[in-house]
Image (cartoon, rainbow, N blue to C red):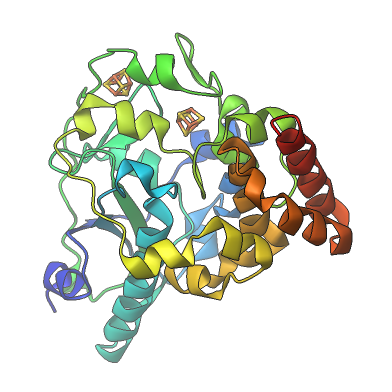
Length: 308
Ligand code: SF4
Ligand code: SF4
């Protein structure tokens, strides 16, 4: 079996086979609060979590951002596509007799350790030829010994030119001389319908924050892609606030539904775009909402009323 070829057939641009990793230092840093809660799903001890595995396949899925007026991050559609490609590859490997399971490992740190990518001042990982615009998927695999040909470890390299554009543009002040501080990054607070007021005030797009990637000169060779009519309709703020989220979920994945996240983010973006035309709809939704979503909608309404 040609692993690289199978990965390319599944749609990945590159695949790297690493030994089952060890990262005690990363796990220790996580315990001390160094990473955002999104790192909680990662297994601390891969050898114990997947005792049958003899390799880790890292898969790279590049993407282009949407054009600047799209109002939505291009990462999540790519993440959803790459997830399904990873599942398809896992099944294809299974048919060849190769056991594979999704790897919950710190993929960014492993790319840096292996000299495949470089960590930038913004904490983003840069891969030559791809910039920082890619999704990483991982599979723990059990390969026959003769096919266990690992990607050679390369020397680490520096890519960041320390131009400070990300530092100056970051709406949360998350990037500074001391490095990246996840507690000031908007993305760390966008996983449900409850967001701190300072995050809501600074949110510029649906599903994440694109600012540090947009301004980084290391990404400027990547041409943004236009939004299709279907995508524009799926991410229409009025529809999302009204609860018509199914078309968007088809694009970004069903797990993005949790906690009223999409509705809440659409409402906050409507406030930041001064969409006072949506006030009647927002008030109707707030009247029937409960819990954190109701609080968010009330924040949005009072924000918009100050602008009327
Ligand atoms: S994603 Fe946004 S908030 Fe987070 S570091 Fe980048 S620019 Fe700052
Ligand atoms: S914007 Fe400049 S300082 Fe920030 S990560 Fe990119 S190259 Fe480095």
